[in-house]
Image 1 (tube, helix red, strand yellow):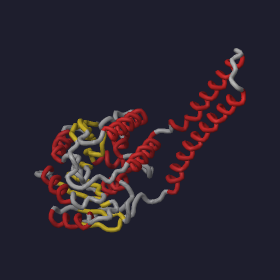
Image 2 (tube, one colour):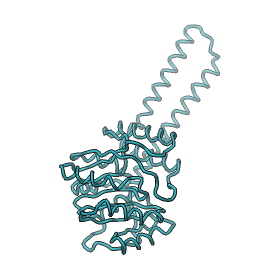
Image 3 (tube, one colour):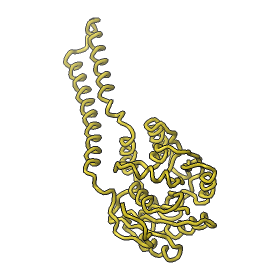
Image 4 (spheres, one colour):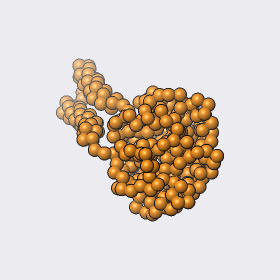
Length: 304
C-alpha cells in the first residue's frame, strides 16, 4: 500500500483538488490519503471531513498551529503504507510525478527525493535566499540539498528510521537523507498554487532557516574563535603601525578597537544563547503536537 501524507494549513480551497489529483496519480494502487490539519483558522478541517466521505481520506487535526515539521511527523506516524509519499496540499508538488517515484522505489530505491529542476514563479529575491540556505545546508549535512524539497517517497524502513530520531527541532528534508539507505532523485518543475496564497512570510522563512541550520551544525559556535582572531589581527596591525611611527590618534584607535571587540563579543554571546535556547527546548521534552480530532482513524494505530 502507498500512503500519501499531506500537511495543510489554511488550505480550505485546495483539499478537494489535492485529494482528487493524488487519487488520480495513485489510480491502480492500493493507497490511503492522510491530511494533517496544522491548526487551520479557516474551513480546512471541514473540507477534510468532507473528503473523508468522497475520497475515503483520513484526517488528523492539531489543537493549534504547531508547524509543518510536526505535521509531517504526525502523518508519518499515522501512515500504514509500505511506502509513504509526502506532498504539499497546494499542488505545487505535481502529483503526476508520484508514479515515477513509485517506479524508482520498485526498482530498489528506498528514498526517492523530489528535486526542483525549476522553481516556478518564485521571486528572484526568494530564489536567491533559497539558494543560499540550500548551499549552507549542503555544507552542514554533507548532502546535496540544492533543489531539495519535502516532496519525496520513503520506504517503510526509512520512515521507521526517521521516527527513531527524538529531537523536537527536526528538519524532515535533510533527515530523510541523513538516515542513509539507497536514494534516487526525481526532477520536477514547481507548479503554480492551485488556489489561494501561500502562508510563508519572510520572517517565517528566516526563522525556519536559522532553526534548521542550528539542528544540523554547531559551526556558528566557533564564531568566537574566528572573531577573536580578527580582533588579535586588528590589534597586531595597530601595534605595527604605532611602532612604525605612523600617527593613529591613540584615543580614537583604542575606542574603535573596543567597539569592535564589544560588538563581536555580543554576537558570539547571541549565537551561544540561541543554541542554549535550542537545548532548553529539547530537554523540556514537550510533545511535538496535540491532536484535537481524527476522521477515518485507523483502528490498529497507536498514538505516539
